[in-house]
Length: 212
Image 1 (cartoon, rainbow, N blue to C red):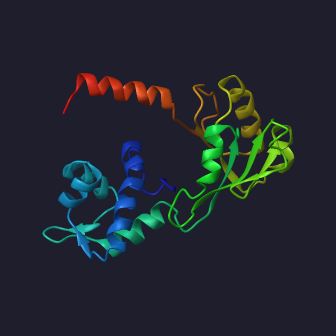
Image 2 (image 1 turned 30 degrees about the vertical axis):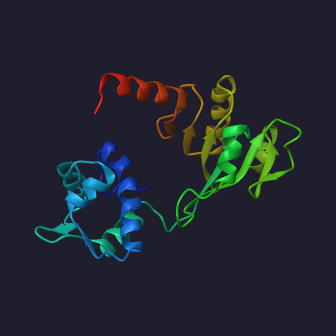
């Protein structure tokens, strides 16, 4: 995602894929225009926030008319670089990693795809899962091509930082971290942490303390 022009808040940037998914569905259903209220109801973000998010990009809609679905679709596809293939490498072919390889279709137009996977299990090395070849982790420097820019980590937490240090040296630019480890990386490397245990605990807490 190219967020350099314009520079927008990170919270807004994180909502853009959500908007894009809904707009894709609207376009597929043949809808020509949509209001911020309709968007709000669908994506569960209040209308004022949606209008503010959109305002960072100029006049995306017209007062009293709403937003042109075809235009929004084109805008978000361009903004989110959906016409470019982003190549991904997966590290750790356990249960979660295997699930990722079987569901190697992150977006409707395949703009992100896992190209290769790495593990240390000799029973997995040299095989394919979901059409993705699995290599030994020791061979990452030889097998990881320069056009692979994102790494998904589903390795044990104790191995995560050592692996990330190696990936940074090789040239990985972004990391989706599914391990509990909090990684130390240079400022130019983008890391998104997804801790399923913490998310589940948070959900339970909110269910008990903030009932609808």
